[in-house]
Amino acid sequence: MTASISRQLAQFVHELSFSDLPPRVVDKAKALTLHFLAGALEGFAVPEVQEVIRLVTEEESVAQGGSTILVDGARVTKAGAAHVNDLMHHSIEDTYRMITHPGRSVFPGALAVVEGEEASGQHFITAVVAGYEVQERLTGEYPPSVMARGFHPGAVFGIFGAAVAAAKLMRLDEDQLNSVLALCVSLASGNAEGTKSGGRIPREAASVRNAMLAVLLARSGTKGGETTFEGDGGFYHSFIGNNKGKLRYVFQGPRKTSLDRISSELASRWEILDTVHKIYPTGGYNGPHVDVMAKLCTDHNIKPADVDRVELVVNWLEAQVPDPAFPRAAPSEPRVGSTHYFSAYGIVMRGYPAARQWIGRSHSRTHDDPPEVLEIMKRIHITPSKTQTLFGPRITVHTKRGDSYTAQSTGREFMWDLEEEIRRIPERLPDLPIPKSRFDDLIAAVSDLEKMDRADKLIGLTLKRADQA
Figure 1 (cartoon, one colour):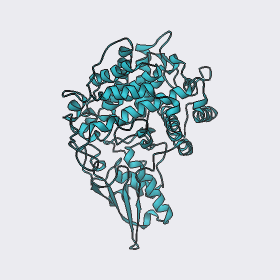
Figure 2 (tube, helix red, strand yellow):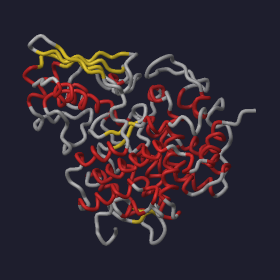
Figure 3 (tube, one colour):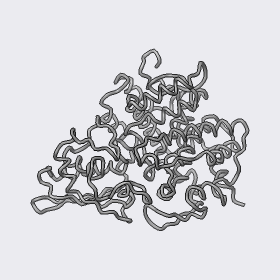
Figure 4 (tube, helix red, strand yellow):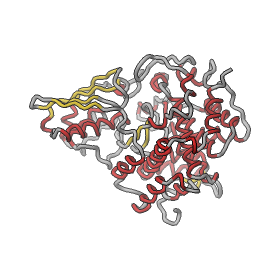
């Protein structure tokens, strides 16, 4: 009899060791580690983050034990630190299969326990990879169908990445890991409606809190069940509508997948390598529009005044922004924060400024945008396609001279290794809450993470006060 999904994943996580990880996977884990920590440094000063830090330190400070809030240095409960460290992001985060951000779950979960476990860099990397693999395998092709049922996939799937990373660092055994996953099924949630009407709902932050609860319950002996994913009333029935792999919406291809794919080719097919690094204050699918458009215009010396119109062919779900059942705006509508807007920035500015704040979908402030951007975005047309890959637009610029130029994105431009991360990330951090020299030390530490005896040294390198570091 085939073991349950949770049992197969638990066995994989329990048996996974650093020596099992291919060099490319280790490199990717380090790139994502730097990406997450850079995001925390970038987002620390955001007013909403500061308010949550105040709230958590008032309610959950601890005299001993607990965990450290990145940058700030306050010691609070593990759940409180995971909550704040998740929220401490502005535009620098990662994305998998659109609208899930595994780094926002995996790293808060890992960092919430790493100080108490005296984990080495190799142990930390292994736990991070385990968290990414489990979360992303469970995510698979399901996000559009999850959104269609009113849930946010980032929270629904994020609980598993946080819990697995923490549980691996805490050296839980196979039975405990199985219970962690099963308990997370009961604790997973995250309705998507609030953000469509002006809300800023801390969905992923709540999911990492629940992840810590699941881990601590499992460690104490609480059982979680065995068929919680594939059972007739289990996880996929609840969040997809069935346990047969039938999908209401898909990114591409047939509306059918297999639950068997979740646990197939464990330790040989590495989903972490397909994680996208996001650096612009918008949905990750807009990143290629900025960079590929900028390169196209640079290569062909296309100036803003030369542009007659632009045609974009994009994955159809990207044009739904990205909820297929409850779209928030017409895909043809150019507005501040739309794909048209970021594509126009690629034409006019050859990039997007690092200092700009997050562009929400209800954002209407335009006074600091170049007039050329606001004018050109009205001449950009989007065609949704069910064959176009995610994050892979086909861009055609038609000039007033009558000629045209086309670039086809691969969808992998933002799937960076550590070298590319180190090259690109400093440009997104014009103002650091720590000295530049310490940020350089952080880069060096992450680069040699597998050689570190104590991975929690990474936390100290983010702290803004020298006496805390």
